[in-house]
Length: 500
Image (cartoon, helix red, strand yellow):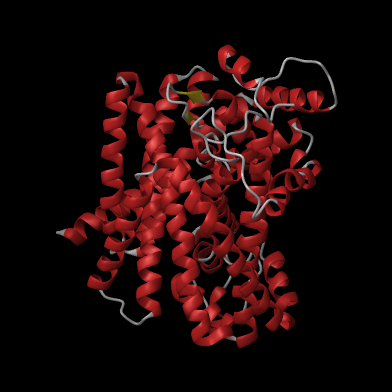
């Protein structure tokens, strides 16, 4: 009975996934990025240096120094908002997702991950700018924002905003399911106990830890993420670089595999074979969006809770976020995986039937032995765990948005109900078949992206206007700041410490 239900779900999702991730979606994602690149005059290139100089570099320099707390709102620091957002993007998609894309779409899929990230940088910037501009502040001083807010208050399209919130709820459950599933799969495989009961136990532990953290809301999620994200990212980067250097002779061949298979026409040795263009681009784009979330309108929910009142300042964090997620973490994963398997000769035996989790683990164990296995069993769960926390907040805000029109009490009850369902689903996802979880999450991500990308395109003029306003003020022009879409908040924000 259970198997027949799962099969029915699989069949329906495969049908829906084929529609959602068809050419219209690919054109919409790339088209939005191209459009915003043109409208902002390639801002992701022109302002990449500035995005680093005004975001991550000052943060690194400030490590260990006392932080001046913001006392006029229950907000989080820019770095905590970034950490919460990046924790939602830097997850299993950066390791297992990249491996899965290569196995099912060929090495050429990596190129399309880069492509989606290049245009995704400006898409993510646009989302953050709109998110902060249209966010709301409640009577307790808490900020709430996201795609559903700028769709409702920017486009004035309430039904599309509600649809975006519903898709966000679905995507939150799907994304947490993937992360939990990979935690249970990776840990149980690492220690040779790949059984139902072991996976169930892991699911229960993850669910309990998640429940403790999400009770504290974005403040606690931001604090936890700001501690874990730098540690896990640095550990992964160091290990990946060491392994790539160890297999340095295979680096040219790795890049050759990526660039000669962009269109999927050139057959490769061994099990990889030749892939059709649609399959290569689909896998690369889907996994790219799964990893960096640019276009989904998800990470903007966390960014909207930031203490900054300048939309452009938080937008610059969005540019760096996608750059760091894909061009650094995902690229290191791809090179680690390809160089390791080229050097060992295993590359000729790989195919889409190979296990993505097992192959990701072997990339660590082949280079570092037992130490690599232990590191993998540490890094992957941390990546996945922080993603679970971030998406709980995204889903929480979506539930709040949907029920806020019925009153504060109804919204709070909806948030509580979502949190309970979210925690229960974590346990269930730990024991469900891996491929089904990935595919459902891909479908939900695609659905979530549609209303958000439509809004970004239609509100692109507003993004340009806010950006021009910021840089005009930065050059000394005496113009009215564009900080909020609401006059009372705009007037209040003008007196904040970080406003130019």
